[in-house]
Image 1 (cartoon, rainbow, N blue to C red):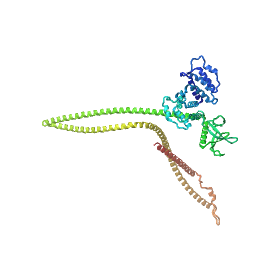
Image 2: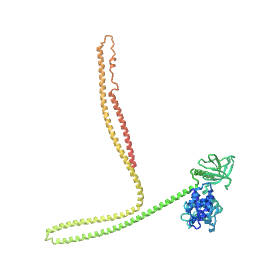
Image 3: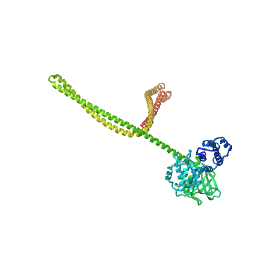
Image 4: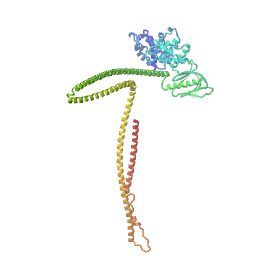
Amino acid sequence: MDLRSELLKSIWYAFTALDVEKSGKVSKSQLKVLSHNLCTVLSIPHDPVALEEHFREDDDGPVSSQGYMPYLNKYILDKVVEGSFVKENFDELCWTLTAKKNYQPEKNGKNILFPKDAFHLWCLFNFLSEDKYPLVMVPDEVEYLLKKICMAMSVEFNFVELEDFISQDAVQQSGFTVWAFLDMMNSGKLTRGVSRDSVSMAIEEVYREIVGDVLKEGYLWKRGQLRRNWTERWFTLRPSTLSYFASEDRKDRKGNILLDGNCCVEVLPDKDGKRCMFCLKTVSKTYEMSASDTKQRQEWTAAIQTAIRLHVEGKTSLHKDLKLKRREQREQRERRRKAKEEELQRLRALQEEKERKLGELELLKEAQRQAQALLEQDELRRRQQHEQMQQALEVQLREAEEARASMQAEMALKEAEAERQRKRIKELEEMQQRLEEALKLEIKARQDEETFRYTQARLLTEEEDKMKALMVLQEEQEEYILKTEREKQELKQEMENKSRALEEAQRQLEEVRANRYKVDQDVMAAQRKLRQASTNVKHWNVQMNRLMHPIGPGEKRPSMGGFNSSFRIPSQRDPGLRLRQKSEEDEQLLERKEGMQTSESEKRLSQASNGDMDMS
């Protein structure tokens, strides 16, 4: 809730107080006086020319709130600067105007509240009321405010009295008006056994906490910055400042500590005869303080940390934030309530649909009973026809017996015809028995069907709820199955390609191995031939040396290195050996490729099997 909304709430009460006839309009002279007073308390320069221009005397009749709003927004509210005026003085002006007309505590014969307490409750009501006109406060906010007041008075909140008051006609369906709230407080039902002074002090404390944004107040011992002596001060904590005064009346302010994100609170050990110490560190200074007990120190450190957090988050008021959170919770509860009502309506619709289907089922049962009656009539008619047929046969049989003497040949034919008829009758009787058994089975099946339909009608509601969730899961599963099938097909296609490539590589490898084997055989044959040729050449050299240089008596045999040096064994770099080495390298390369392809195919097969397991 911004400053403009807060000011408009108080101005709305002042405007309605000037509306004596309750017509929604106020005379121009009264609006001029109201505008002048508003400019004074808001510290805005008063512009009488603009006021006279806006409310000219040649205009006829009073002005409504919609007619006054353009001037109020343009010449007053748009010029308001937060912090340049005292909000309490502004509220007192609007309270004075509206209390003269609407606040009459003496009419009930009881007056528990002091005038200042009534003003503070009016300010609290404006702070906690909804941002809708006419202004009302929902019962949850009333309960919250009363609990705060009872907590300040250290008494237990009486919820029964609040329920009784809510049930009265004074409370509207949308919430409390401020005058009904003040009448409830003046009745004394919620403050039985508590003195007026205690109630006043509690209202003052709650007013300073909620409207004045005071997070915590109380006495603390503070250590001086220069003389380092300990002095007891009254501290007041707000979201942005921590002020300390000489006494509880807050008239002589001794200092003001600005809080920001660079501030922090630390607990200190006891020293110098002081216990329950803590310090507040700012950018420039460190303030040492001592509380009365450990609980007070914990409350003060938590409250200062809350103030620093609010400042860091850019929030100017703790209770404004809490009010918004409570409003969000109420809206969530309202949405859940509406959803529950919609669910109940849907269930009622389903119940009506079920009753309609049961009616249709009753109609079907009635039609079944009628069909059963028709079936019984048809069965009776068939039995009568059968009896008539038997009687006719008996007549024919007697006639045949009488004419047997004269018509022997015809009698034989008649006997044969009678035998065929008896067989036919027997078949009909057997068929009749089977039809009766089938009829019994059909009756039992229809009874079972009625039982199953009753069970089906009972489970229909559960099935519909589960069906929705099942359809969603089925759609997701189908999408995932299709995706997995596509991936599986692609993987299968890729595996087939890899398999074909592997088979081709294996075939080529076999060819290379065969070629290598042939080359090895050729190389071995060439080596054998080479060794044989070398042996022959050595032999020929020996023979030739003997022929060319005969050995005389006492001469040594000449060395045969000359001729052998001209002939050398082929080195390992001959083409046959190079072809063999190349074939071996090709074979190793193909084996490595085959191993890589096999490992990759096994990895993809494992992934595909894992995907099938996930799908299942």
